[in-house]
Image 1 (cartoon, rainbow, N blue to C red):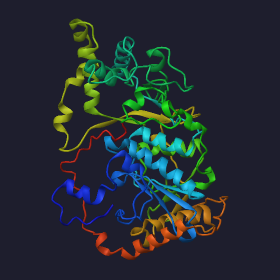
Image 2 (image 1 turned 30 degrees about the vertical axis):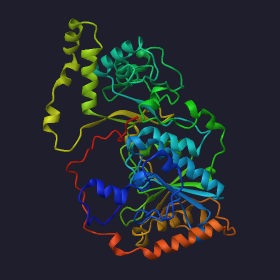
Image 3 (image 1 turned 90 degrees about the horizontal axis):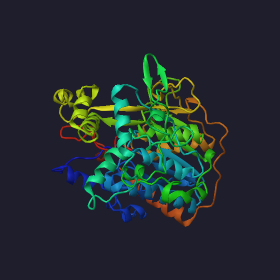
Image 4 (image 1 turned 90 degrees about the vertical axis):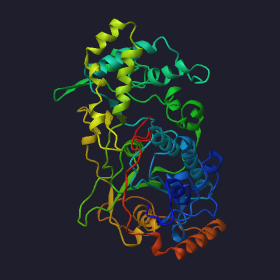
Length: 475
């Protein structure tokens, strides 16, 4: 997003002017965007929008009045805004159906990922009866992970698997968050048949050996588990837990009436969402941009690991096993003589650059049916169609969405490679009062666009940035 930076004295004033959108409360996020809300530069007036513009719903105007657009530039949201993120998707999809919209574009351009369950939840809102898992997961089998799986599983067997009030029992609360809900507790996840593991050895394996390395057996998130949403900012995925009845809901848009556009980046949680959308639901993908040459480009070209853990968190977990999960000082000393003893060394942190973090792709994603168990990191994923940028697209994002709508639904092919053939053309309809009002707002918005909204002297300054936010591929 390009915005003028004149007159700002700190990050808070910048946030309030350009990034806050609607007030950051659940009720505000669940309400329609007011016509007086200032739109994000380059974006039209929203129908719904979450704080920080991490997700927003829009309608197109004129001959594209049948098209709704859900813009999802990130699955990252502040901890207090997890639920508003969900609500925007839910409210917008319901509003689009009520307004008679027939086609849906989902724009995940520049989406670098975020909270994993946000990706699952948006998919399940779109496909209430769809298969509820993406690729299966696995992690490396070596002494450290074996010991952690054994100790965390052993400790968890004597602890309840339930929500705990920190104010009532802070000790038990800490054990629930750090130990019971950990991936190293075999009870946290399900096997590939959506069954519980019998014991920690059944999860740990070893499962498969590849190129001299051993890996665990494959496992999946347990979306019905009480602690999985607990550790994700309170995100209950539609179709599970208290939202289990959502599977009875009607699918808001037919599969053939949905298309996803990406600039080819799409990393982390965005790739999990795309695995669900492409492999489970069969939704078509358009890639945008690239070098001015012929040929297809990847629809999903970012990092495809399925859980990224900060190194300081891994260090914390290993130290916790030694100090809190052993039964005697002698056992702790013995455990410290294994690989776990290496994790007390702070050398990696002493050597890292300021304002950076050290993160590890802890889980590989393995696509269902892939007998070779090739991690998705190494699987090439071409788009179904590739469109090049135009000048208009740089100042008006609706130019992108209209080119996508033309290629997917309108019978005008902007694909320089690939094709979305077989999709139905958009049907013309009589303009409603809501359509006419939207057309007026869009006209006023385009009329007021000016060059000062798009300065060319912006640069990224990461000094003082917190790059270890929980949003980067945490559950």
